[in-house]
Amino acid sequence: MTVRVPMRRWFAPVPMLAGVALIALTCTLGRWQLSRAHERIERQARIVALENAPAQRVTAQPVTADSVMYRPVLLRGTFDVAHTVLLENRPHVTNDVSRPGFEVLIPLKLEGAGGRAVLVNRGWLPRDPADRMRIAPYTTPAGEVQVEGMAVPHASRVFSLGRKDGSDEVGQRLRQNIDLDAFSREIGVPLQPFVVQQQSDAQDGLLRDWPRADLGADRNYGYAFQWFAMAAAVLGLMVFYSVRRYRRLAGTSEPA
Image 1 (cartoon, rainbow, N blue to C red):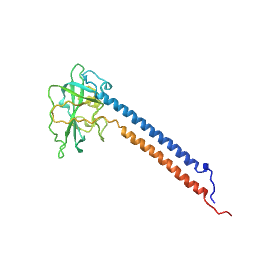
Image 2 (cartoon, helix red, strand yellow):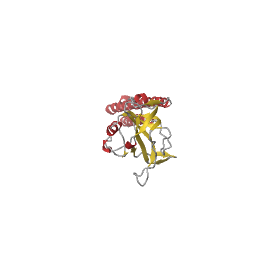
Image 3 (cartoon, rainbow, N blue to C red):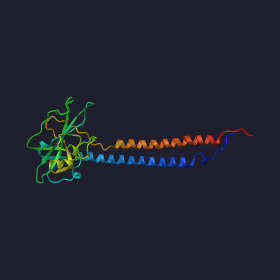
Image 4 (cartoon, rainbow, N blue to C red):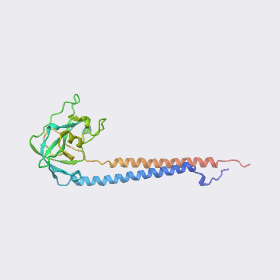
C-alpha cells in the first residue's frame, strides 16, 4: 500500500532553505533591475524635453556640464584645426548597411574672455577600406564661425587596450578614445566639461545624423527577465525534487 508522508517531510531542510534564499535573492535583484529601468525611462523623457528647449549660448566663461547637458547650445568661435582628432572604429549604418569610419573632433576656441574652448564633434567620415590613413575630404571653415549643436557628456567610446585617459595616444591624429581632461592638458587650453555634437549643416562633407541618447532601459528589462527566470527555474527544481522525495518516501509495499 501507499504510505502517507507528512508534507513537512516532502522537503529536505537544507536544500529547501537554500532554494528559498536563492529565490528571494533573484527576485530582489529582478525588482532592482526593474526600478533601474523605470528610472532610466524617466530620465530619457527629461532628456527628450531638454532637447526641445531653446538653444543656450556658450562663451569662453566656465560653464557647468549640468547646466547645458543634452540641451541645444549655440557657439561662436574659431576652430583649432591644428588639434584635429579622428576617432577610429566608429561605424555608421545607412540603409541597414554598416560602414567603418571616423568621427572628426576639433576644439573650437570660444568668443569672450576666459580663454576656454569646447571640443566639437563635427560629424562622421567613411574610412578607406584599403588605406586607413587615407581620409575622405572634408572642409573646415576658417575664421569666426557659429555652430549649433547638442551638449553631451563625452565623445563616443569604444573598447581599447590602451590607457583610459588616452595618454598613450598623445599627439596622434587617429585615436581610439579621447578624455577631455587629458586632451585639455595636451593642447594647453582649458576645455568646457562637455562635448558638443554639431547639428548645423556646413556643407562640409560630414554626416551628422546623430543617434538619440539611449540610457539602456532595455538592458535592465533583459537583466530583470533573467533574474525572474532564474527564480522560476529554482522554484521548478524545488517542486520537481520534492515530488521525487515524496514518491521515494511513500513507496508501495504489500501487507505482511
